[in-house]
Image 1 (cartoon, helix red, strand yellow):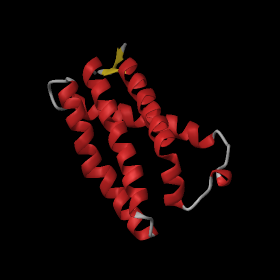
Image 2: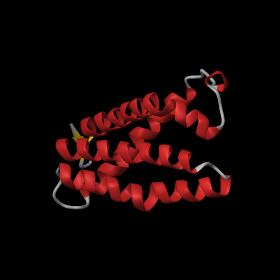
Image 3: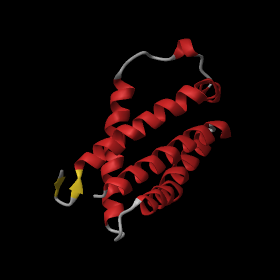
Image 4: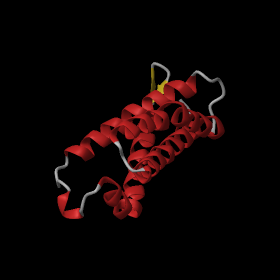
Length: 133
């Protein structure tokens, strides 16, 4: 299903796959992430709000990534993954690095969170590349 040149099925699948990637990432690295932010499991708020924000953010990220990939010409898994990696390098990890440096965050937090967003963008790029835009 495309509208205005965007395959919205690919975008929704990519957004949900990105969310799932994040869920798996933090299930595996949650203990280390808690230590990096200086919290205990009991300190975490059980509110669904962060999860809803994450789903919306992943969908927005997926549609923006689809727009970028669509401007590159040939749309395939390779261009999708490369686009995700370059966007991560040029915008995501650089922004996180600056913010974390000024916040005094531990390097481990930057590595965990930065790795998460790299994995998300690679998965999204692969999905969008596979489905097309």
